[in-house]
Length: 113
Length: 115
Image (cartoon, rainbow over all chains, first blue to last red; front, side):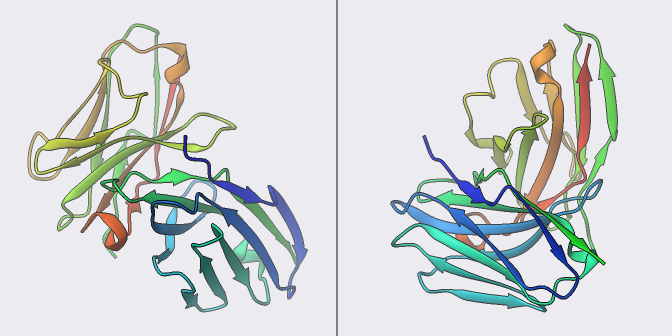
């Protein structure tokens, strides 16, 4: 059974703080790791698809790193803004899958003005 | 920007009834998926669909579930005889490619409540 874990479960930060959270996944049979941002009552929005060990991707103030050998990925948000408040989901794609994503439970981020 | 749409946004049904959840994927996408999230639990994969057939399905996707692409635009999930434990948010997704290039675009979900 594949297990994808995210920590922390929730996070409260002040506007302007930088923050990061973790996604842990099986290190064997790795194919890709997806990060999604999910605001309440909206569709989950794809942030990154990461495939290579050591990969680092950036979109504005959000960036992510990947370590496939030890099975973790970090998501960083620099200078958090209230509009960054959302649930951040990671999802693991393993080697023989046709796109079946296995999700973590998500990290709920609340940014206080 | 193109988006995945789903209807209805909320469906209430009685146990034992059939429901059909509808999705319109992004028009040039070739791969289609259904996921669900039971309240308080992780988002879980149900099924993937490509070239008019199921590519992969989870243990949840038993004989009570079926998927169809009845025309060039819609992608549907049918639950033949709903159970209380089918109550969940159901998400449709689509992607241009599968595998590592397959960024999946999600719809806003249909909340299914079985009473």
